Length: 216
Figure 1 (cartoon, rainbow, N blue to C red):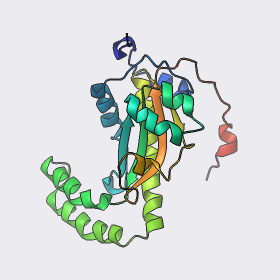
Figure 2 (spheres, rainbow, N blue to C red):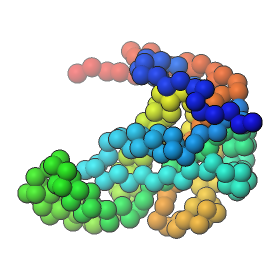
Figure 3 (cartoon, helix red, strand yellow):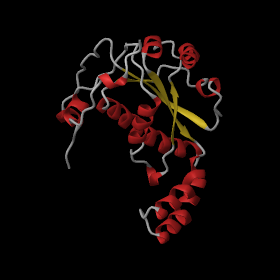
């Protein structure tokens, strides 16, 4: 019988969420995360900030046996995480996310988050700016935004009682195509495993603040 997610308590203890997070390599394969709860996790993660609220991130949630069999050959250095986790979340950025600018701004006006004149100003200034960005400059912006949501996703998962591991060791050239996505449009950022740890993750050393910080 599959273990249900009801057994794992959520927490609002910020220190616990941040300081006890570990990168987990092996999960309990019997633990399943319902799509309802996964939707809640992704919804909370999507509160992450992004440049002019463009939200370029896109998720591919791989939680079926068939999906995991597809991803496993592409994650040759992370087979255990791929096959034992409750799900793998492939984070992409949408290179065509500018198409959503008007929808985002219109909804912001409708909900009372911004006045109409601010929306018109942003459409008049930001859209031409984005339209004229080089591919490399747009990539830089979208990678930063996608990195922000990826970290937020891992913290939200921890608050829900789950463990995660961010992975770069997978075939980024093939993942979109294997899952039927337009590889020119959807650019891979990272792969995040999520589930309940079967083996606790190891603590890791962090450089002291004095080493990584200067003051002005």
